[in-house]
Length: 249
Length: 225
Ligand SMILES: Nc1ncnc2c1ncn2[C@@H]1O[C@H](COP(=O)(O)OP(=O)(O)OP(=O)(O)O)[C@@H](O)[C@H]1O
Ligand SMILES: [Mg+2]
Image 1 (cartoon, each protein chain N blue to C red):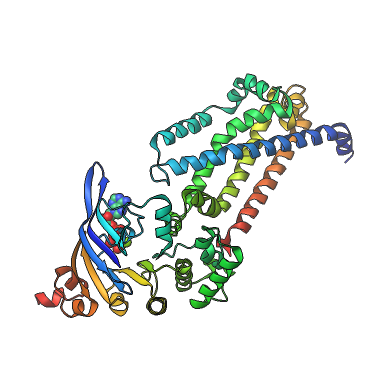
Image 2 (image 1 turned 45 degrees about the vertical axis):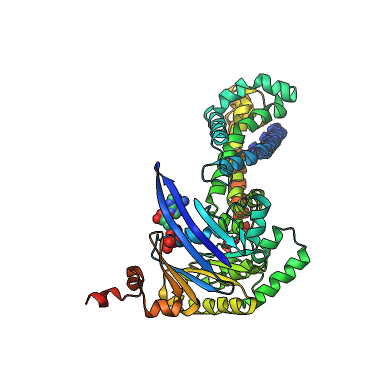
């Protein structure tokens, strides 16, 4: 379980503080595919990056299981991050490493035995459907294939949590669909809790069991996906659903 | 043809020795300039305000060192460093005497180029590595230097070529090499044919280094697959 309690994040820009996240409270249960939805600049990435401390909260707590991770540094922080996989909008694959070596990267960081990490990486590539592409370089793959490699890499440490920041935003509809299916399989078969950022409600609807809508640093709505879609409460949610026009008309 | 034969009979050994001295001077200087320049460049990137370990004071001092080093014209550095050079290698003459000022003048230049190459590396990759629990040291070695390699190689050929030029200047204070030959024969004895030959050799050397460097950088860059 991931619990976020009274989390705020302010950035000091040009001398004055700007509040980017304000008193965020969220609970993400084990096994969830939890959607975080909002418009550009709402604070989605910042929020999710607080979960693996790529961003440090200004105040408030983040609990994973029952441990407050907010103050983690050094070894503790590294161990924490190993337990949380992450994938990105533009894949962030190492361009000078081949596919296999990209997937081995998290294991290489831990000085894992070469033969073992090789076997693990091959197994993961098989799972994401790229078993024959190990010796390719990222520049030789399509966007969808690159994201599959990134998913395999994120799973190398057998994490219990996976953070996806706009993981399908750079992909076309068909490819998006196949990546979503893969993530669902991972969630179901490996029991990985997924936190999924998107600005697309259609994508959220097809993959998330629960969602939170964030607007200008505030959570304006959260609940089971079906409920939120059926009966959106916040103005932003209705706007995102394209319903605001109808309501006015 | 006959003219060539007699020219080579007379100056062949001299030019060959000069070419060899120039290559040795440049190669050794480039090597040591990188031994100093890589850590310096890495430190500048790492301690920058958006770096892995921001450290304002250290970054400012490093910036000064690099800029001061780059703002002293080589020819002045060459003369000013003579006592220091004597202290380090025991002489300010010949190939060893030239290497010290060449390294001192190239190191800050190399540091800046290393900095540039590392800054070109996509910040998203650093972030990805961090998300897998990479330490700062691992990020420097396994992400920045590794992903920046093709760009670093291009920097090496630029340094090498710049040092060719500098080593010729070092020739004026008795460093040996092609510059020394050009000055002694061409300038002091008005033997334009010798001077011309040194120029041709330098042009050829520069072309070879540039082509080889570009080729290697291209071959190594996996983005070109
Ligand atoms: N390092 C930073 N310094 C200052 N402001 C920042 C920083 N990072 C993010 N912000 C600001 O915080 C706000 C939220 O940014 P964030 O990246 O979390 O938004 P987002 O919801 O992920 O948007 P997008 O959909 O465009 O990715 C933005 O207004 C942004 O300008
Ligand atoms: Mg974002």
